[in-house]
Image 1 (tube, rainbow, N blue to C red):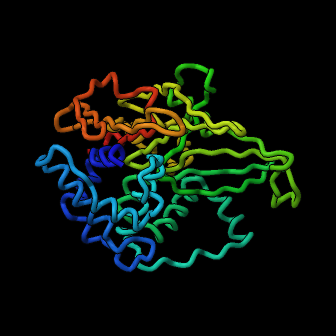
Image 2: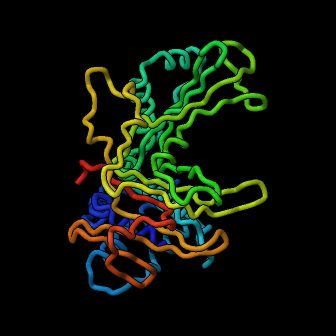
Image 3: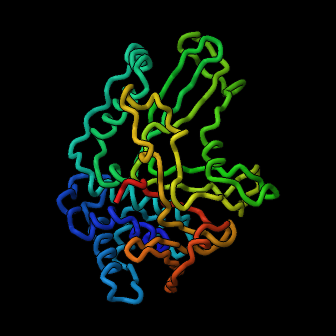
Amino acid sequence: MNSIIQCLSGTIPFARYFISGVFRQHINKDNFLGTGGVLAENFASLLRTMWSENYNFISPVLFREALIKFAPQFRGSEQHDSQEFLNFLLDGIHEDCNLVKKRPSPPPESAEEEARFEQLPDWQASGIAWERYLERNSSVIVSLFQGQYRSRLTCLTCQATSTTYNSFMSLSLPIPAKRSGPASVSIYQCLDYFVKEEILDHDDAWQCPKCKTLRRASKSLTLSKLPDVLLIHLKRFSFDGPFKDKLETIVESPMSGLDLSRYVPSTMFPPNQPPEKSAFNYDLYAVSNHFGSLTGGHYTACVRNGYKNEWHNFDDSRFSVCDESKVLSRAAYNLFYVRSTVK
């Protein structure tokens, strides 16, 4: 909890939204999926206390009580996964601050409508899918942290396609290495593995709507909309049959200028409106680390203080200034990137 909250506290536009009190204008007390604003209010109070610099340490009892009501699985004192905690916390805040009071019914599905959608240019289909998503979800979480990816199935017999667009809050990237494999891989290798084309065959064959029978098909994934704040979860815990393991591989990733341009096809943008190159570039500003094994361990955080232009290390009640060269290690578990153009 400490590790993730320190990283979110270092997410400047997000922290500013709560500390300034702007979030109160957006509290949705009628949303049965949220906490009526209790979680958001306690999170804001915790951030204000942290940013006041009046304390050497804080015990976030009220915040934890508010979170437990929303996510009771965190009630005990045993260790939980920081990625799971991050997702539940952001989801709870999203529901508390969701501006949508009444969710519209999903549009009726039909083979004709699906076929028409399939014929649209990528940029148009992506935009329509995103607008439909925003009709049900509109909050600071969506505007800062959420992006969209496209999943496409292609029949390898007749080339018919089926395309879906889904929102994401974080990218869970596989690490293409075995325990006895290379000591390090690059973040780009992880991204390449994430979007690698998959062939569906035999038991996984696809029911092609055009061939009207099971067919061998390819499944491809690509990013279609990038968020301002990009959360990357490194899948260090591998499950190989009955064995569970933790990958200690170092994932080399740029501190500044992470370039995602090759993962967003040009077809995702209207013709004659190419995006600025800077829109694809991201800078690292926080890392949540996991030390230890699958059964037990310890979390810390490294967070960049933009005002002092230095990295800070948070280890339970201990705080220290951290050298930039030590920020990324084999313990890096959650990476927090912000678009270079966002201030």
